[in-house]
Length: 521
Image 1: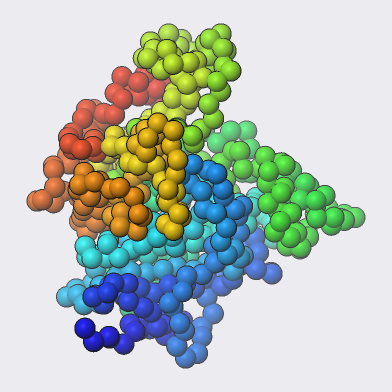
Image 2: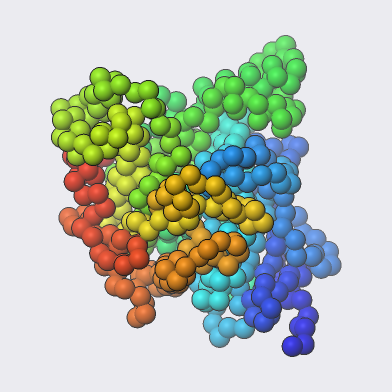
C-alpha cells in the first residue's frame, strides 16, 4: 500500500501536520494541539487565554506533557507511573476519518483522576476505534490540583469577576470554544458536540451542565461514575482551604511575606512545594470544584433543583463495585460505631437501611459502611442526576455495569499485568472498569480477553457513538435501551446478557431517595 502524505488541517491559529492512526491510513490523528496559551508566569492561576498564532506548519504528531500532578504508583488499576509533566499542558488530541461525506458528530473526552491526576493521551483513550464508527474524538488535558482549582482571596481580588478556582473547568470551556471554532477543519460538526467523562471527568460534565459559561457549546452529555449534586460542605467557595494550602506551601518553599499574600506571591511558589502542601493541608479532601460565583454562580444542586441546567440529552451510569479499593475500608469499625454512622446519616430510616444492607453487614460493619457510602456517591448520585434531567424533559438514559472485567493497569499499556489474589476478575465491576469497553481498546493491552469482553466492547462503544450521533443510544444491531423515567428508574444492565432493569439496587437507592429527597427538591 502506497503511503499517503501526512494529513494536514488549517485552524484559526495556523496550519497543522498530523499523522495516520491506522495502517490503512483511514483515520487521521492530530496530537498536542494547543487550545490555550501556556498557563505559566502571569497566566498561572488565571482563566485560559486563546492560543498564540504560529507561522508555517506546526507538527502535531506527538502528545504534549501531562499537567502537573503527583506520580502514581501502587494504586490498583489506576497506577500511572512516571511521565513528563509541565504547567504548559493545555493541549488536545483529535481522531477522525480522512474521508467522509458530511461533517461528523464530535465527542470531547474529559479524563478522570479526582481533579488531581490523569491525562488524556494514554492508550486507553486512543480514539481510533471510535473514529472508525463515524465520530470525531477529542481528548484534552486540563489543569489539575491547585493549578486547576485553587481558590484564594488574592486571586479573587485580581479577577474582574471576583472569582477564583475552577480553572480546570474553564480549561474545558476553552477547549469547547476551540472545538466550536476549529473542528470543521478536522471533519467535525460544531453543531453536534457530545461531552463525556468518567469520575472527575463526569463530575465536570455535570458542573458544565450547570455553568452559564458553557451554554451552547455542547448538545449532549455522558456521565460515567460521578455527579456534582452532593452538598459541598462548610467551605463551598474553597477560600479557607486555599488559604491553608498557600500558608503551608509558603512555609515549605521558604518564601517570606512581610504583608498579606498577593497573587504575585502565589505565582512564585514552586511546583513541588505546591504538591507537598496539597498533602499536608488536606486541601484535596473536599470537592475541588468550588462555587466561585462565575463559572458556578451557586451550588450545582441549586441550579438543577430549580431546572436551570442545560437541557440536553444525557446518558448516565455507574458500575457495580465502584468502592473496591477506591473508597476507604475501615476494618476496625465496630457495630456500635456503624449504628452511629447510620443514625447520623439516615436518622429515623437507620433500621430500614441496615436491613437493606444486612448481607454486607454480615461481612463486617466496615464493609457495610463503605458499600453504603459508595452507593450514596455513585448509584444514588447518578440516579439523582438522571431524575433531575428527566424532570427537565431532557431525554435521559441510564446504565449499570454488572460485568466484571479483568483487573489491569489501564494507564500502563506496556505493563498492564496486575496481580490480584483471588483471580483477575475477582474485583468485580470496579471503578473505571467501563473505560476500555467504551473506547473499544482491548487490543492495546496484552491480556486474556475473551469473546464476551470483545462483544461488550462492541456494544458499549456502539451505544456511546450512536448516542453522540442522535441523542439516542439505540441502534438496530444492539439490545433495546429504553429511556429513563423518574417513576420506573429504567436502566440498562451491562453484563454478559444485556437487559433492562427497574433501577439498579432499587430497594437501597429508593431508601436513599426517601431520606434525601427533601434536601434535593
